[in-house]
Length: 242
Image 1 (cartoon, helix red, strand yellow):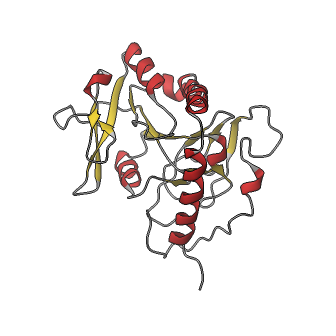
Image 2 (tube, rainbow, N blue to C red):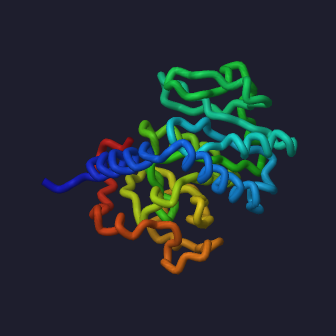
C-alpha cells in the first residue's frame, strides 16, 4: 500500500519530536538565545509594529527574549489563544508575562478579554511560529490540528511568518497538502533562510540563503543524514493533515 502524506507526516513528527525531546535544558536555552537574537537583528523584525509570539511547550525554541525586546521597544506583543471548539486561533495582546496563563491545551495563553489583534491598526506584523520540522522552502510540520495554517491564512500578505527551529529540524522537504501554509522565513542557530514570498503552498519557489552561517553545504544547518531517510511524496489529495 502506498504511503500517504498523513503517513509521512506521522513518521516525521514521531522522529523529530523524539530528537527535540532529547535536548538538554542547557542546550535549549543556549540555542534558543542564538535563534532569538537572529530575529531581533533582522530588518523585518525591526520594522514591525507588532509581533505575534508563542509560548514554548517542552523543548520548543523559546520566545521570551523576543517578548522582552519588543515590550522594551514599545512594539505590540500578541500571543495565540486557541478556541478548542472551533479550532481557531485568536491573537490577543500581552503587556506583561504575568498576563499569560495555562490554557486548555496546557500552553500559556492570554486572557479571553485581552485585546485581539486588529489587522487594520497593525500593518507590519511578524508572526513567530513553532513546529516539529520545517522545509527549506517554508514547509512546516506543526504540533497538530492545523491551527496555525488557518491563522496564517487569515492574516494575509502583510504579515511575515517566521519558523523558529533547531538546525536538525530543518529538512530538504516536508510532505504537504493543499491546506498547509508555507512560511516566509525559517531561522535556526546556524542561518536565516528566506523561504518564500507568500505564506502559501508554492511548489516552484526557490530558496535564497540570506545568512550562510559559514556552512559549505547548499542548505546550511541541515543534517545530511536526514536526506534519503524518507521518500517525501506530493500526494495533495491525501487526508489526515495534522
